[in-house]
Structure formats: C-alpha cells, structure tokens
Length: 341
Image (cartoon, rainbow, N blue to C red; front, side, top):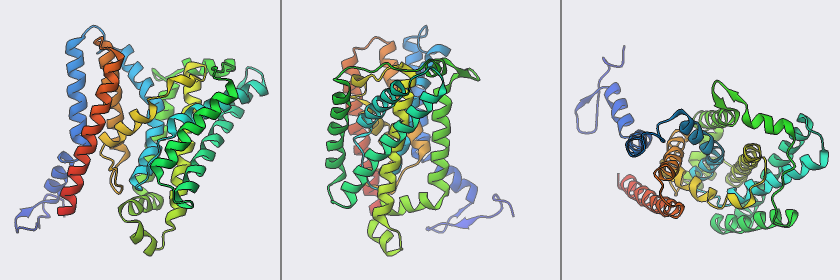
C-alpha cells in the first residue's frame, strides 16, 4: 500500500495521510526555516553589492571560511545534544596548530612525512584536551561551562608559552601546495569539511552511539537506568570535540601557513552561534548536523556580507552577539512549548 492510500487518524479524529504529516514536519523543521533565512540574506547582500557578493570567487571564499568552523561545529553539536558545552575549541585549535607546526619544524623536510607527523600530533593534542575536559566534567563534577572556560585560557596560554607569543611558520612546502589545490573547482579544505560533516551527520542520526547521545541529552538518569554508561559516553563526546578541534587546527595551519595565534578569539562564539541557530538545544536532546550546517552558513554569510557592504568589523561582533541571544531565546520558547505539549 502506498503512502498516499494509507491514511491514519490523528489525535482529533481527522484523517491525515503519512505523506501530509511528513511534509508538515519538513516545513515546520528548524533547518527548513533557516534555509529560507539564509536565502533571504544572500538575496539582500546580492542586491546591496551585486558586483561583489554574488560572485564565484566570493562563494568560494565563504565555503573556505566556513570549512574550519564547520568541522568544530560537528563536535560541538555532539556535545550539546548530550547536554554538554565546550567553550575551549578555539584555544584547542590554536594549541593543536602550534604543536603541529613545532613538530613539522622538528622533523624537517618539505615532503609529506613531516605533514603526517604534524597531523598526528595535532589530533592527539585535541584528544588530550577533550579527555581532560571530560574527566573534569564527569569525575570531578566541575560544570562544563567552568571547565571549558578554564581550558580555554590554559590551552591558549600554553600555546603562547611554547612560542613566546609569536606565530610559527615552519610549514613544509607540501602543505603549502595542498592549501592551494582544488578538487572539482573547490579547495581541498572544503572537501575535507564536507566529508567530516556528512560522516558526523550519518553517525549521529543512524548509529547506536548517536542514539545514546540523544538519550543522555534528553534524560541522563533515564539513560543510566537503561544501562548506558553516561560518564564514559560524555568523556568520549568531549574527546571527539577535541579531536575535531585538533583537525581544525591543522586545517587552519594549512590555509594560512602560520599558526595565527591571535586570529581565533571569536571562533568559539561563531561556532556556538551557528550550532544554536541550527536548532541544537542548549538543554540537550535536540539537534541535527543538517541544522548545524545551515546555521554555520548563516553566520558565515552574515560575516562575509557585512564585510562586502563595508560595515565596520566591530558591528560584525555586535550582530553575532545579538543573534546568539535571539537564538537562545527561541530555543527556550521551543523547549517550553515542548514541555507543555
């Protein structure tokens, strides 16, 4: 029997087909609304600067800008769906990039061997900070906000101690060439980000690990009674967030060929704004990688559009800050409606 010929009765006794319910669910979903907002923003900036915004070069620039942040946003989505929080990703990115650059400089050479060594060290560095966050949150019972706020300062401070506050530029020639390589007309970093995002989305939506993440975020006590080791699961999620921050650090190093220590102060704010905009609840249990992706593009298009229309950089920070407040307000309203329902 087809979907069209299989009507069912809803709560008020009206006949509603599964297809109609599916379409209603699609049109009422957060990512659908956000996609409309993203389209309107693109149209508005295109009208304001038709010579600068709707160009292939600018679209490539937006995709490249969002690629590093989107990798971190995938990890942040996992943590927040489970009811956690991670403010430290920007500093972990810097620390991992510094460690990778120092490792490549110590190994020496211009080929792929030092690049591989740097990548391994960057990923391990991210995992170590993630495990530390998870240990403090689950074992020491320090709130996630305080823990990751502390590691934000610690990771950035150690990175500056290692480098004396100066950027490291010991990047092999192979990595510099990779940064300008294009596959099917797009930078390699964009494809790496796409692979991480798709894999992260499928893993969260269709695996047992993903289901446990939603259950932990919805009700941790119920998850414990269901036999889920909540503390171990949370430690794994923070380790995943650190791992992806480490990968983002290597991607940033690839793009700029330097550690850009002072250039990531707003990364955490941009990622959290995009994730919350994408429908991930601050209270856990709700959110998808699809929504996060659309939310991150809204943040990046807004940044790019404000620059294109010659708005001062300070106003960009003001806009992102207010958007975050609005997104949290909408999240609270949505949560209240869900609780009443």
